Length: 237
Image (tube, rainbow, N blue to C red; front, top):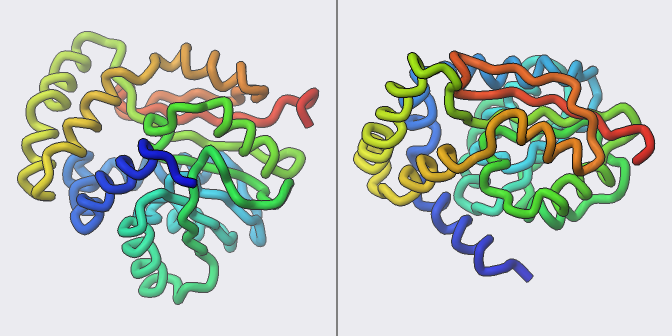
């Protein structure tokens, strides 16, 4: 049974689904395309791989993977309307043959053991409170040698970039997001969760605490985003 928090989260993202892509590209000045390409490249996929896209949203990370390699992607999300948008884009871009949207909770993923070659998540790990259940599921689902790529927002460490970014995050982002989408709440939520998200060193510690070895940590665009790449620790395979 879906818990109340999951229902609330799904409802919030349902409200912004129609304008989600426009705002992603607008609010990041289009840099989000480059970030996704870097995340996909970091996994070193092969043709024929099956990849799990956690918190797939409208599918942009999945489509970046499919553009780079002839892989197939299963995208899971709690929001039915996000998945509807993703399925529509997939039909238009890829004729529906390699992307499979599934409504599912990242803390209770309904797939058999060892079915995926790699996993990835972009801007969704902030929304998952129970990392133990999330990473336990990822460990179970990945084949030997599989990796997970995590893209997530962060606060720049340098004051020169941190101060203007905080102004943007606190003042401009909720205003623009609310004006375009018609709902300010999700963008206030984005602001608050980005500010509350752990610093990169703490993210690494928490991921490694879940039985993974962090293989790469890369700050992107002055540190407003970070890419983490991790593999299952051998003793946990």
